[in-house]
Image 1 (spheres, helix red, strand yellow):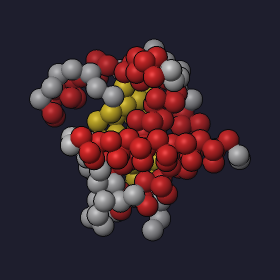
Image 2: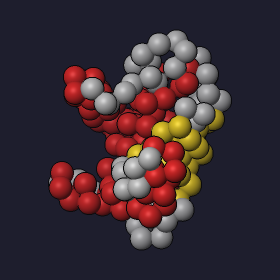
Image 3: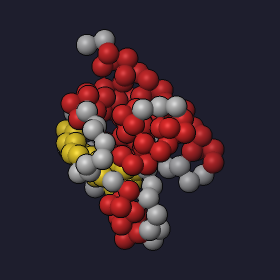
Image 4: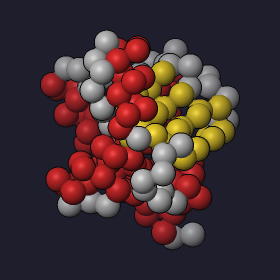
Amino acid sequence: MPLPKLCIYNRQKAHVIPLPWLRRIGKAALPGCLAALKSSDAPLASLPEIEITIVDDADIARVHGDFLDDPTPTDVITFHHGEILISADTAQRQGLDHGQSVDHEVALYLVHGLLHLAGWDDHETDEAREMAKLQSSILKDAVKAVQSV
């Protein structure tokens, strides 16, 4: 199965996100996310391209309100047509809470979004816990792969 093309854009100004590094992390994480498909009809199995856009809290809150009826900022929103929105502002706050850099949190949210496209859902406690373990493992492997190049 060919890997989808990742198109990553930065549409916020407050944080400098290293897009080339994030692209390499995303490419390295894709095989693990594809291996974790929940079903053969999950969007990730057939998408030729995935668009990832880094935004600020105001933008993600607007989309969250428009599409999910919750006008508050969130970390990541994934659309099954292959679009992932990531809030750099939320990544900054959560990174501080978890002792991680904003770059690491954004990369984690990227893997999280890819797992949503692989059919994972984090609304149930047990699946959320399993998804969190899986995304941490995939991210760890992707970072190792990128660092070894």
